[in-house]
Image (cartoon, helix red, strand yellow):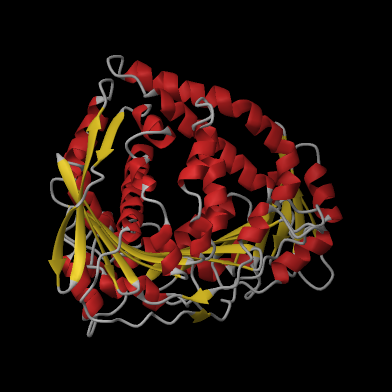
Amino acid sequence: MRRFMLLTMLAGLILLAAACEQATAPKTSTGPKLPAPEIVKATPVPIPVTTIPGDGKVPVYLKIREPLKTLERVSEWTSSTMPMMTASTMAQQIEMMGIPISRFTPGGNMLVAVWPQMGSAQFGGILPLNEPADLSRFGVQTEMIPGGGLLFGMDTAGQGMKQAQTAREDLVKIEKAPIDSDFELGADVQLLWPVFGPLARLAAPSFINGIMAGQQMGDQASPMPPNMKAVLMTEAAAVMDFLNQVRDATFRVKLDKDALELSAVVSAIKTPDGGTTLSKFLSAEPVAAPELTRFVSRNQIVGQSTVRDMGKMMEIMFGYMANMVQDQPGAIDELRRQFAGIEKIGAMHTAFGMSMSPNAAMRLEYVMVADHPDELMKLVHEKIAAINSGPLHEFYVGLDMDVHITTQPLTRQYKGYTIEKYLFRMAPGPNARKIDRQMMAAMFPGEVPCEIAQVGPYTVATMSQPADGTIDRVLSPEGRSPARSVLTFPSGAVFTFDYDLVSYLRAVQSTIPGMEKVRLPASAPAVLIAGYHQQGKAYYVLQIPRKTIIAMSGLSPEAAETTGTTNQ
């Protein structure tokens, strides 16, 4: 999966670099004059409120909305795959665990808090009961809360009850807070990180060395490429740096009639001097980006992204890449020189489509609009040469990838616009593993054509397919609707995706060992994804259609028509 992401990232970088190369030598255009798309400020989306008090008394909690009704929804969701798992059966099993769910007060929520420590943890919380319950035989201590609810604590030394009593006021606030999902998991990251962060930093190198050793033992003839360790170490460092800047995080699960919705809200730390790097990055005003996805064909992945400040984005990318090229003296400075001036672009709005053919060959399609397209056109053409030499090239060589792209394009005219064609080659290195050779040979067979055209305010780029169709859609978008994710989620997102999971898996299963024997459904609705950054918070939403879940479980999609219930 990491190798696939690196291949996809490189392909996107190549198209962007080629677009910049094409833009530095603009040709006279006789095509139709197109107006620039309108970009306006968007109304901030209502991000779900974080209910973590933040005073250090509740590090982790799980909240279940109206447990009896939630059990009914779970039962109806699982009825197609596990018909014996009825609400009453699950309730009986929960009763056997010592939770008197049959006596729960209607309308109340169940709350379980955890106070983790090295090697142990205490548990406590609130049960929606308006009468005492003796749970001592299960090792649970209880006491009534004035105004309703049963406070409980559990552990071997009785510390769970003491923790629950100390945090009772906060627990009540969390339990009473409005909730529109079925399950809510909250974490006070800044309370947890001082305890577990140092251990994670110490354990990461040994864990990664174990991964590398395990992979090599599994394939002695072709060990993991050396730069893969740098990738893993960089990912670990990025995660830990991210967590060090996070105040709290909340994850929610909602069982709706037609879809399973997963969402997350991450709040960055705010400091007196204006905030951390993360909080500043998450605080730009949202914009209603132009609906560019109607210009790309309906691929297996169709999406749109908005980078509201290319300069800030590249600084984050430089920090990420610095760890990966740290063994190359001066590499990061060279990368900065190669991308100098990119901050002048301002915001960049990009629609993209990616699909894999039945033999797993990758096809990419981009339509880009910049705040300052003239600055985009001024970017130096050496960016395309960065693929062929320098630190970026050497990094991919270290991943056993031999990459090259022509720097003198072939040109042709189409409807008054100049299309430039570059040839890109990616071949496995001499020490590449068998699975990596198969994947690269399938995704990039031979020399892959990349085509670029400037169509008025739009920069069009394609890989493994002519740019003609994309240009046609830019010139005549009438009757074409945006991607479903664009229509489903409110405007102002920094990214949206339609992900046709089934179609994608069918295309790549021939390249994954053992996957060719898996029976996949003929089709299923796309998974929808969106992300928002505003007011120092990140809000991500994932909707998995119920029909897709049923289809992937091996059942007929029509089964979804006869089951299900709405949230109450």
